[in-house]
Image 1 (cartoon, rainbow, N blue to C red):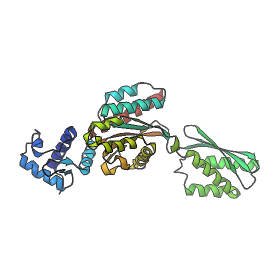
Image 2 (image 1 turned 30 degrees about the horizontal axis):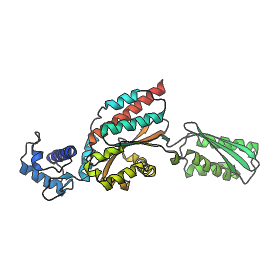
Image 3 (image 1 turned 180 degrees about the vertical axis):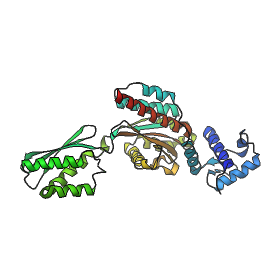
Length: 348
């Protein structure tokens, strides 16, 4: 059985009504939709089919229906194809020049929470897929070398390595030339086994030195998760929704929201799945959530980019009956505003 146009219309009507009321939806309520022009009996039959297909469920024998996770998923996928909605508060914020990125992100989290009536989180920007800009090897003594690594964003990291052979001035110069001509402009993902093998082969007797240097380069490029800042706002908005305000559920959600390592797990999942999303926006509904403590919720996430690999994650957390249309529109608009703002600043 497939979803025809009538079933799609009825399913959307059920979901929109449930989003507005939070109460199970009956056929009589749906029959009042002017564009349906169907009898209650016809709608009941269609609702029965939708239940059999897994798009809606009946919480109690005498009650109406509510959307299942599968139903929400269908609804979200439909919305993802629609045009962006303008969000005035976000536009006004992005027009302002904020000197510190941290202040901008904190304000963004507050406005997202206030605008959506859900909880919001934004991770501070970090360098992802850093490109190597420069390597400098210098002699400290006969068996020690200083490795200076400069990566994208002009981040400089120094390390001293112990070598098991003496390296002369001419050999050191040749190693510097070899490393820079072979590695400059590459990300850690691009420094693969093939690149490493060719480097070692060209280094000849000093292949061991190259191996030690590459270890330090990988460490310099690696994203430092320990320094990640996560800004949150609107956690108490959870209490506005009866299905989440139950004492135990609310307590678990608030606790989860306050644990940086748990939010970090969510951000890691978003980054891993980013290549599967054409729009840059991902939606996790119920059991799709990678974080156990949030499986009574839905989370909509997006990665923002400030240029040169500097990137972070935005997330909006709410009930499964959240207003997906508004949330998706808000995030899409925010992505556009960030992109326009930082491109403009670079051109100034």
